[in-house]
Length: 113
Image 1 (cartoon, helix red, strand yellow):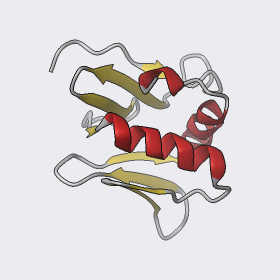
Image 2 (cartoon, one colour; image 1 turned 180 degrees about the vertical axis):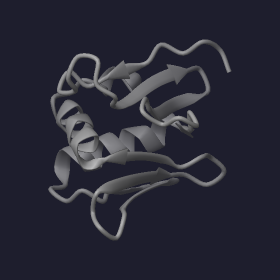
Image 3 (cartoon, helix red, strand yellow; image 1 turned 60 degrees about the horizontal axis):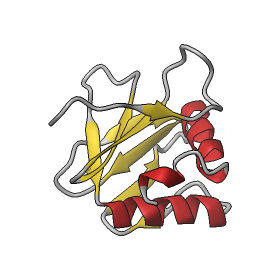
Image 4 (cartoon, helix red, strand yellow; image 1 turned 90 degrees about the vertical axis):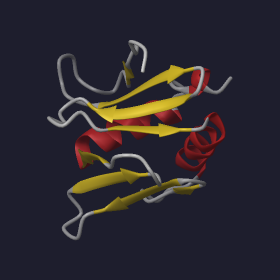
């Protein structure tokens, strides 16, 4: 994979670990900067577009997008992002909510424009 330029939501504090997004010609990549294993989930532009749309339109936190599943742990503290054949990216509620606020503000729309 080529060197990626990661973007996080402006709603994530300076220096904080957050959900990050990057693009290559073959897909949109999502990671959690606090993940010591460096798991990177790769989506098609269509699947990422669907994720953005569902996060903007749906009030719930568990969107379903083609080839992507977002679930919460039993205690509701961890958010798990998973697509078949890719590693699972795990984040916490604060970081997930910062990402969602950024999505709703249009900060990641250029990845699928």
